Image (cartoon, rainbow, N blue to C red; front, top):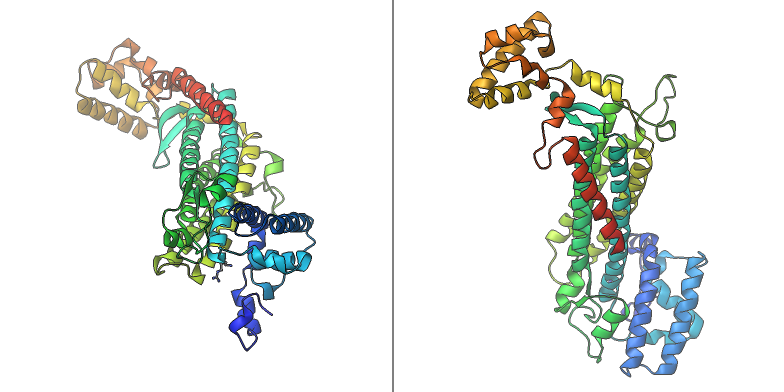
Length: 461
Ligand code: ARG
């Protein structure tokens, strides 16, 4: 007989049972479910809703069930629907009918909301730590290669020389915002829903503050209907994950391009690449490609839950059970992506000569030549035109800006003097960009110091 079977005369159709059950995936919440039940039980006893002796028995029973589940000893069945009913059923098997008192003043609607909040809070903190770890790998790779100069790109066309470190650190700051976004969302996952009952509150004199403080929640939901029907905290987790995956996907794109034979800017370690079953020479950047690919499923989970929620009337609806698989898959996906990325970056070998060669014989210093004329008093627009013509001339003659003689330069514009060609080496272009946040080494060093202090501060929190 089902725990809710009182008013039913017929058995549930087998296909319905399978369709309705969430146990295949929500068993993952057993730890939160039991911890939440323990807090609820202590509160019931404290308020005199159940007696102390009953509470003792329930708590002891729950502790044993937790151990059984830790050891994977409990058999789950579709007939018992979800993790909440499995725990309750096992409890009454163990301690008898008194186990049935645990559900006093509570509904599965506020219970599942509580479990989900506890789970999301835990995963936010784990995600934040993993992001920090990846940020550290980026800072280390940047700091170890401060001398590497490469082309910076716009439109994937060589634009201006930058430090390889500068390019890497751009990702540090994206991830910093991700970390802050996750931490910021923690505050909204930190509202405690239990005590909402099915939707309207409960007739028992529950102490919601006590449950919140036992379980480490900062706030209570102020409205019982909101408490059981809110999944914003799940949406925020998915949305934060989607934005973060966008960053990892863009980093993947850079890594894949840099690792190509055409670019050859970096070499990925054998341990983080895979081969081809037909082409013996291949060494593929599968990790980066898969991270880029998995971004799609994370976006999908966000879209999925937004769509589930958009048409739901208050309060709880069974549709909301659909919040779980997408969330769990997102958690698993982002955690492995973050772990792999940190490990892979620790083994990346930059090929500094290739990077330098790509920028040395190139037009990437054209802006610097124009800026030179501006410093001599020419309006920037005119300087742009002069240098544009010089570039055109070089392209036609298959030469580079460095190949032009000072005479050729002064012919194009009388403001050019002997020192004009000093603007052209890529290192000079990099060094000249000392504006705050620019690519000059001194500025990149400022970034690295700031980045490290953020990582240390956050570890101390
Ligand atoms: N398995 C359900 C879920 O994940 C638990 C809540 C069920 N509540 C109910 N009234 N059927 O949402």
